Length: 403
Image 1 (cartoon, rainbow, N blue to C red):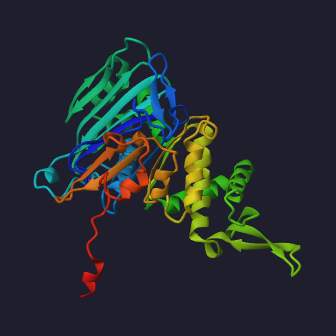
Image 2 (cartoon, one colour; image 1 turned 135 degrees about the horizontal axis):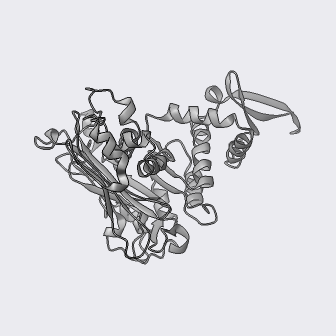
């Protein structure tokens, strides 16, 4: 389970920000806390949100939060094998400050695996990993956080429970541009392996990964059971599709053909990518990640979730994740979107609604709606569009551009 993710000096974020899925103690009549949250973590449970939605103006930093998570996942899982010796680390610091541009970027995640809470993070620049750390805390009363390792440049503090790390560092096997956890995971170190498996079970979809998600859908279609679930999921969305099949030429959709009297005459097939709408293609591509997350209690993170999808369809998908009846395995969903109808659907509590905003120096900030004192009968959507919570664009008279 995802508890928190923090990062700093990355893309449009200069100062450290923290996104959290830990539910607050606030009272909110908009959504039932017993439905939209769940408890996990052994003797010392933590209450977590099933869903969080991130709103903000264009270029305010929404996508950069998802990119930070995506980079963290990729670098943690692949730095020991996909980054060659001497190769630059593809990390981008905040470029609009003379000080931050020369400093490393920071990333840290807090996750719950079984009953254990892991806190893992690192600081890295394009040249090297500057610092790296891994802590674990058992889910029992009076348990204390244990430092498994701490790395400062080429100096390491290693706990006896992280014995493989001592061997790897003793043989100078950890490159400057790779993570110790990434390498230890390759050698089946249990704590590193647990963190890397958690990341592998977390699907992150950005604007640049649409082709990857499409290929994931094609692979899933090869399983007859999964294909039926994806077809049913698409059929329930009222897309006018009777069946979806996989052929040598790609994905085919089947539609019923009718005669002049309205009677079923035959079945007509189309190429999904050539004949169906972009919304249909996106919905089909998302079907497998959505089903996989819900059925297996995984994490799904999607940038621009509402693009090409109807408001009602978007609301239904979110409600699947955000209710006990639809999400019995406690999957977690994080989405960025512009569709403000979700703010008035009574699906989300204030601590599930997050905003990004950029100041005059180009620096993004991140904050939840729960930071504001809001009347119990307030319309989140109306007040947001009025600018009461910030995170909305300040739009000048566009006609001036024509003069």
